[in-house]
Amino acid sequence: MTAIESIAATLAAAREAAVVSHIIPDGDCLGSTLALALALRQRGAKVVAVNADPVPEMFHFLPGQETIIPPARVTEVPGLLVMVDSTDMERAGEGFSRWRQKTGTVINIDHHVSNTRFGDLNLVDGRAAATAELVFAILEKMPVTITPDIATCLYTALATDTGSFQYENCTAATMRLAARLMELGADLPRIREYLWERKPLAGIRLLAAALPTLTLAYDGRIAWMTVSGTALEATGARPEDAEGLVNYPRSIAGVEVGLLFRELPGGQVKVSLRSKKSVDVNAIAARFGGGGHRRAAGCTVKGDLDAVVAMVVAAAGEELNDGRFH
Ligand code: 5GP
Ligand code: MN
Image (cartoon, rainbow, N blue to C red; front, side):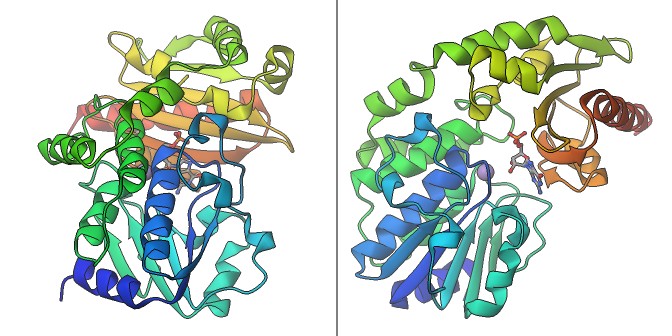
């Protein structure tokens, strides 16, 4: 049996399950979580959908999102734990790996190359543009109907993780699946509206506050912007409004690595890393305890904003120079 088949068989037989994903949830993590939760509920299973952080407003149209609860509200951990889009169990929040002892079987479905293969059953494929591609492959092998609601969740995951089908991770298979999901009834008008046409004004003001911080180094091959706690407060923006800002430094001609530094409460800085052609940003993030993909990765680093900028830019510079000789 392939990994897809054994996971499909385990899920089809499940009477109860928790579907869990990473903190600061994005479209793939939420879309994959909800598609699985909806499919399992269709089979009559008792399912809790779990995320440590609130669902960002731009995803409030996703069917079933209102059922997502934080781990602390789960009184009895089910015997089956399905983790999606998460490199390791701690990605679901600090201390979450304690659930390993409380549950029975752990299924790990992910497309991050840095995944630690922590599950009893693992489906990890770095070639998938989104975890949702793997979820679809599993659902196809299960006795479930891929409803318009499930298609909406999966399409949202593909659209967000590929930056509207523009990044290098978007393959012919991704496009074919997107077409399939449209045919299965994905609600494109709502997806378009919520994802791209309903930005909060405060988010645009945050962009205005971030742009003056734009800095280039290493002959214009590394570019970054910063979002201080004060900027966040002054604009009234929410942390999730900083998503996507990293694309501005990356999009500049000649830039290979784009970075965004966002100050978090408690003396930490969230770093988003993106590259275009040669630099493996997963390797840079890994130096600071983070991870992700070759072209998109992230990490959270202790220290003040300026110190973290200096450290991470220096590390990116080293990778850049390495890349030149390969
Ligand atoms: P973003 O910069 O949009 O937060 O994340 C980019 C990619 O890196 C996503 O695939 C995300 O899951 C991954 N990523 C972001 N932060 C972390 C982190 O702290 N640890 C790990 N392992 N992956 C991360
Ligand atoms: Mn993903």
